[in-house]
Length: 510
Image 1 (cartoon, one colour):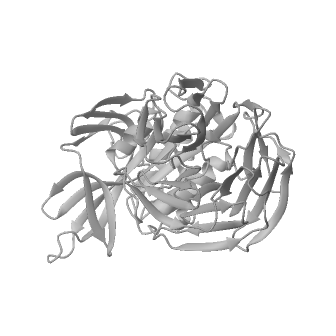
Image 2 (cartoon, one colour; image 1 turned 60 degrees about the vertical axis):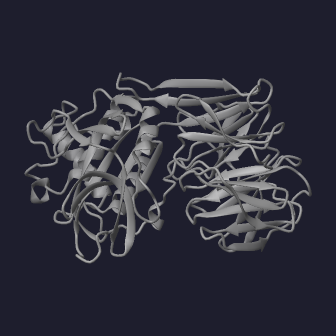
Image 3 (cartoon, helix red, strand yellow; image 1 turned 45 degrees about the vertical axis):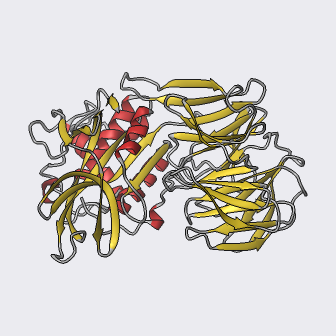
């Protein structure tokens, strides 16, 4: 495998300033992400960078020492950075979420190497193939039990902004802007991380397994990439039922300055699969999966190059859903639920009394939701495949429905094609909320989109992207009004799919 990614004009600020607590020695995380915010501000998102008031010293130019310190300080406040302990990973996640929400900016994705998450070089490659930007953190681990070669303590870590990734066979080089490089406090040379024989590394900390990318290993010491946060502009995926074409649209921030350009890629799948039945994106929105109304099969579509791969030809599912696990796809057929694992083997995981008409994955609670309109039931299936059946008021019998869940509100939205209505059901208290939106011409497609805490879900109304709050009132999102999406669409989630509430890594410090 050969791959070469680089991003130009990424700022490179230093973390060490005399007016920060402890001279900023523990400020690598807010500094690494301040680099990213400055880059985005150069490319169409000016509100991600703050200048001092005009009467304050050092308010001009944009990257004066005073303005750099000002912005790093703002990010550190959002992330609850501690002068002695640094920034916890979940604090960084909470901080980024609040920071971009307050400034009306878009999509971001994160991974840690704990809580059953795995960080791989291929995942980073998939993001950077989409011309995304972000930062990585590595941990310094030391073996703590001579009787257990897998048991380690995390002694600290460091965070750096990624400006390049080169892969040649099993070797890789990650180019970074290192906040701890003091050669120049505002413009520094890139720092290389060399990874020979790139492979994943697993270790235990406090009894929990962590799975990351090993940078170096010597004796009882390991340096391992154990978290990252990647930023992506808006991304839309839609299917034209007439031409049988899938189109992926995204905005590209390539360092050229000015407004982001729209990148549009299209593939006609008529000769591959015929008419598309289901179209879903993965948790990190780097690939999509689709099924056919005409043929058996589940196909994988790379959103970076629009290449299609048939990953299984044993089923012709009624509906599919993808989880946040590596390569896990759920498929329903009649009254049976199947799991397609990364080894492409189909396993039957549940049998119900009725047909499943729609499925969606709850990323916050990590449960699959299988909905039956015929019997008015929802099956909640957790990670160990334990199934709980709950009743909901009956929807239209045998009517095509689409389901999507908002992880912040816990509301399951159900779209009925026959009635052109969207219903809301609160899973927490098991209450039906009635009709949320009536007579919406969605063609059966809805999606949750968390934009600066204002919208609960989005829908395509007569080919235009529209946003609605919990009461069904239409709202406007700056820059996204009347976005044309085509007949079928999926919108990438604007929240972190691996939500901080399910990550117990408060003690991770960098």
